[in-house]
Length: 223
Image 1: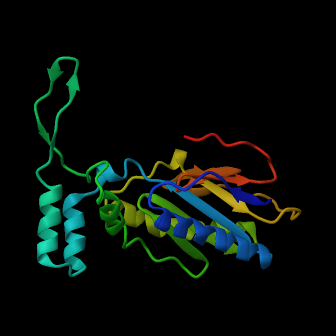
Image 2: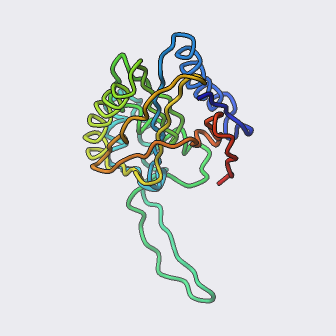
Image 3: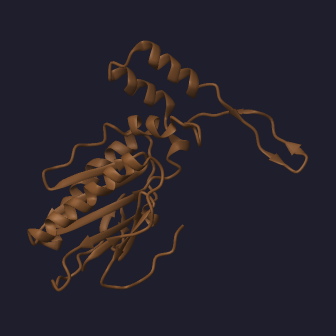
């Protein structure tokens, strides 16, 4: 199975291109070494809306961030309110309990800082991260070992997700297996996260770019 990445990059071209290149470079190198690549693409549920503000400020303090910077970010995140309107009716103002501003210029940076302490992977696994786009990439010669390596990391990740109040939409997350055309392999079982399977697919989206299993010839629609 060959693969290809189509469509144009969106968001910050330098950062997104770097992370996409990391995935492409790993898959291409494994092709040359006759190894398999397995990747899990996680769908973080309402990522920017669910950042735990108190936990984020705690992390910034532990990073020895300048106190003035912590105060500025605290002022930016705390005390925000929202209202809901329908036709001529408007609700009373409510205080927002979590999240960074949707559409805020610095929101992707703040979210990246919030998830910067994700568990470190083993030598068989690497991460490609940009804001709320998360790819977990494993390398092996055996499909079963790919699943083992990915699940070992995801087990560590589950504890971290729970601690920092981050939710994953398992049903809309996906996994892919990359191997060179002509290599006959038996597809492994689905990777498990939070007790649910992440189904093996012949396409996925990462950083807005469709990754397509080139052997299927299937077209991918843009979300």
